[in-house]
Image 1: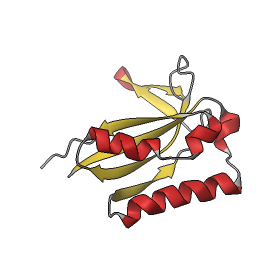
Image 2: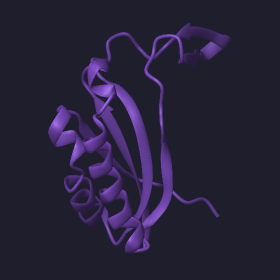
Image 3: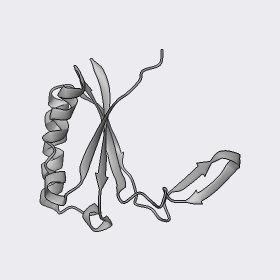
Image 4: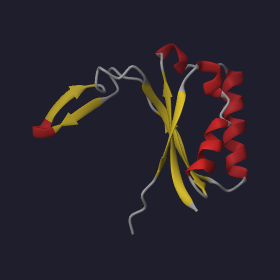
Length: 114
């Protein structure tokens, strides 16, 4: 099986604080992936910029936060195992919280280096 990272993005910082019910739904979704032995890393929640992020560029230039033209922010990620990207996309589609708050999930294959 391959590994895929599911990157959670939100459009508005107000969406960053889901209700307890929404969090329980997300935990149930994560639990269903774990029960299939397809959860590689439960990931983490990332704090929203500004103040909690820096960007390092060439010549050791450091700026606050991500690029300003980004209209959404990454709120977290998990890593899952799946046969292919389509199977990983189906896992992402089942996530209930982004239907509720209007975000999106980017699915990317993880390149394993041996």
